[in-house]
Length: 361
Image 1 (tube, helix red, strand yellow):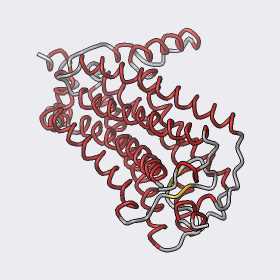
Image 2 (cartoon, rainbow, N blue to C red):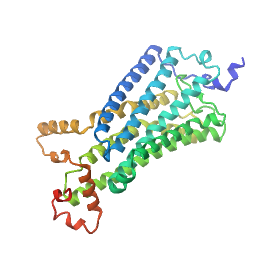
Image 3 (cartoon, helix red, strand yellow):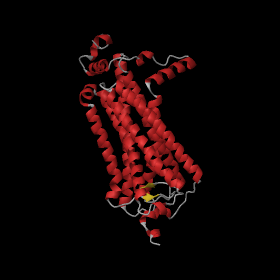
């Protein structure tokens, strides 16, 4: 009788979602397996690329990307394992979660592995924006040591946000579907319950907005410098990275925006009556797709793959889309010199008069 009144089991009172056990277990296992394999392959590709560009400006981007993919990998491994266990146990939380330890761990992991990839995506966009707009500053200040410090800070901040309910003695709640734990979304009592939902949503949406703004500035700057200098060499690594960043941003926006908006709506309205359990499960599964699609950005949108796709497109369409010289390898030093000269008001007048080869000497 006392267990039925425990706040730990509040989410078990009104169960409105009824999912078939076999289908749900199979769904979770497939998601976890595909996510782990995809992220493992992406990590191998990024580590191999990092060994090639260890001393170049692309190394910082590869470190951030590796951090993002590793976070996605552990997110699939930890959250997926807990989800499979819950489904396999027939969602009998009363039997295996009497002290609320598993639900607290599940809730912390859901928040951390939800916010951390969004934060890392925005940090990567900021880093690439600085690398394109201020190449000299980036080459001198953005060392591997600084990148690792930034990665650590981002992860610690995400951990702090995930631990906030525990620190304020607010337990994570079992959701109505009995398959996952998160902030309290039913019977919201006071401003603190609303605060956690709105904090999570606002931080996620802010990260997406920062990514969009920085990627826009980066793309515009690259196009402006390209048309201004009429030079194509030394920019291939910039275009490759901005294509990957744009893909990451699009994937994150499509996958995470519905969930973030839904949680914000619940926090603002103080009740989830407008959001059904099935709707929340759908947007939650959309969010989990982000961790599956992120690694495929680095697997598919590499320079070698893009060159192959370009050749296929030319054969199929018979159109001259872009000059393949853009993808020719050249030194990062030459790229930085071109960018630095293009920023100088004195030297910008000479760019159209001097060949690119003279700047690299």
